[in-house]
Image 1 (cartoon, rainbow, N blue to C red):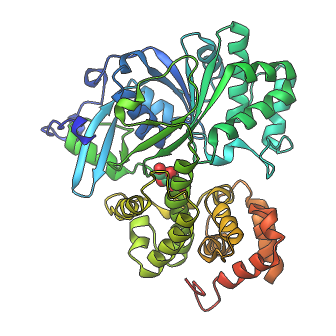
Image 2: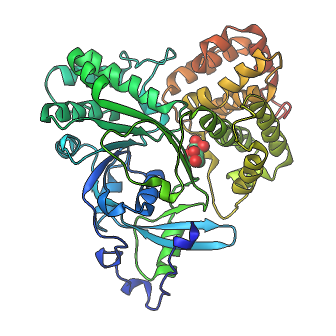
Image 3: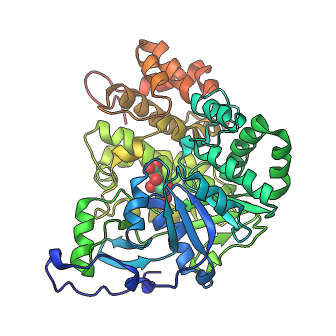
Length: 476
Ligand code: CS2
């Protein structure tokens, strides 16, 4: 894949005189918009936008990307005609490529543009990276219509005032415009780290649509295909040093580069009624049964990430690579991988030993400064996908699930001590942390999984794995 990267021109002039990344550096002709993306962030740009550029029919597939939590991302990108530098950061050095598949970068609040584009017959896909927490599902897997942000959007939709603020509220509004325009079927492609993410997106969208207009919910059933995908490419937040590295190596100023690892993977399952780019040209895999791939990635990669995010920070580490060289953390990760592996199908060509070895190498790439604090965010939602299924499967098999339980215990300790704890359920977590002893453990467990909270032996197991005043951990 790195063969497609260009050798950058060497910098010859002082930084102040450098040109901005501009349309003269466009690597491919500007394509018409056929993909609408929600959640314009670094990951979308290192992953789906990159796959789209590598497709042999990329000239037909432009992306209009709408921001989520960071409207300024659209401003910086729009100033560069949507172009940005993708820095592939390998152990041995960097390579640079200009990506041009995002042809429009738009503030997510611009609902006029969003509805116009989703309603256009040329648009075939809506892709999503809106974060795990944004799907707003309750423990029953259905949209929690009592959650304040969801309830507020439903009230707005019902009142005909078309200004929903949640990503799914906005998507539902835009799909209604497509129905009204008679533009036909479309695919929604979920690219967030959730198991069965197409179904999760369907539940979220259907929940909104039903509560708003039952007739429209039926239209969605018949016309919107929800594609599940497993996405993978480690992409830390861009830093000022990254901007300087691009300036130095490429000889132009780019205010929006993205730094990522050489590895990338995308597994997809579902129907594309209005077509799609030939993402397989860039290595994407289309499969019938996505579950084994999803679980392999969510448990082995993301699970280890969350374990390191909490246990690693409690032991004073800042990045994934730093934490992994701590033998205690490494041991905990290997123990969790053993538990996860025991619950993955052995015969699905998943190549687990190779996958584990490759993961250890990817995590050890010390040139990728992947901050544990960034991974630690939104833990209540993430642990439901990363720790809970493994813990439950281990217990169902008659084993303790101690390594998965340790991830949960470390999250609990972290929630009580972190200087900044960001989570959609932060208030519930804070209330639980005001309790003491076993009551505190039970209440914290209930935030992520009520069934586990009701199991006295799991509660005792987790309690025993929490840190002590003497330091962290009690036992790793
Ligand atoms: C990480 C992921 O922040 C997190 O929760 O585990 O963003 C991870 O880096 C990606 O899924 C890698 O593909």
